Length: 145
Image 1 (cartoon, one colour):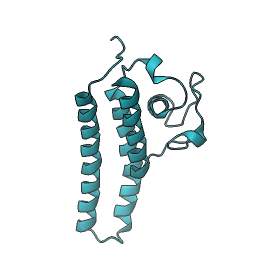
Image 2 (cartoon, helix red, strand yellow):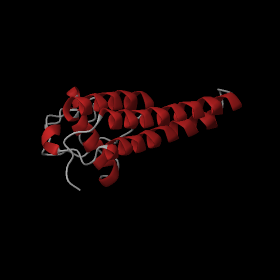
Image 3 (cartoon, rainbow, N blue to C red):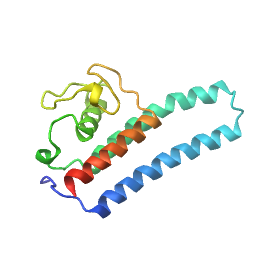
């Protein structure tokens, strides 16, 4: 498939909407589970704590896949949120969920959204994913509209 240099605002909005619906569904599920079980139920809280990072790692994979054919030349390699999502997705899929350095990207953990350093285990939670996806979509609009 050839690389894509531009995405329509409609496509970007549809992807953003799908992400928002998935995050909202997650939050609704957690709220419903907590209503059915006392909040001090340790088993429920452990299950939520265990499930959350797996769900949001898969959300990173979805985010990357929506725009996987984006033109790399427009993305640049300056450690921006597009680079961060690419690195996270590649590491989740191919490096046992440990952030792998990408020698082609000038990645600086201190300037990144989630602050992961190469070699760290990736554990993405709802708040971090919301920040990351917001920055990712802003960067997509900035470079690919």
